Image (cartoon, rainbow over all chains, first blue to last red; front, side, top):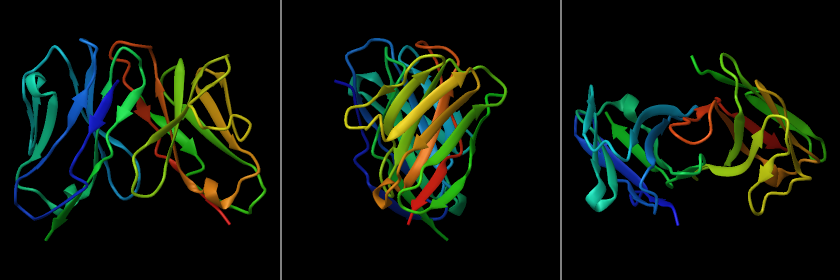
Length: 113
Length: 117
C-alpha cells in the first residue's frame, strides 16, 4: 500500500534557525514521484518541488533544500535561515503508477520572530 | 502557465441549500480533474476524480448524490453540494492534470471555503 508519513505535527523555531521537515513514504512501485507543497494561512497550495524516483540528486533552491534517500524511503525538506514568511503547513505527497496523490498529514511550521 | 481558478473563493449559505463550486483550467485543457476537501488542521482528502465527458469516480465514503460533479468540458468541472448542512462546511480544493500517469503534475486551484449555517 502507498503511504506518506510526516511524523512531525508541528515544529516551532526562532527566525534564522535551520529546520528540517521529515517525510517517509511507502510504495511498491519502482517509478513514482514525490512532491512538497506549502499551504500558507490563505489555504492556497504552493508547489515547491517534484522529484522522480530515478533522480536521487539532492536539490537546492535558495534557502530550500531537499534530501531524497531511496534507501530509507525518505524525502526530507530543509529550510536554511528560516524566516517568518516560511510559517505555513507543509505537505509531502507521493504519486505512483496511479495519477492520484497520496498526502502526508502535514507539518505545521511556526517561525517566531 | 497551468493556472487553475475556483469560484467562489468563499461562500456562506443556509442549511438545506445547494452550492455550486466551479473549477476552471485557464490556460490548458484538463483531461482529469480532482476534488478534495480539507477540514481544519487536517490533510487533503480526495473526494472524487472526474474525466471530461464521463461520470466521476468517487472515493469510498463520499456520497455521490450529495456531492454532484460535472466535468462537461476540458476546462471546467463543477462540484455541487446538495442540501448542504453544517457538517459540509470545509475547504474544497480542485486540481487538474493534462495527462494521466507519468509526471502528470496536478495544478491546484486556490480553494473554496464553504460555511453552512
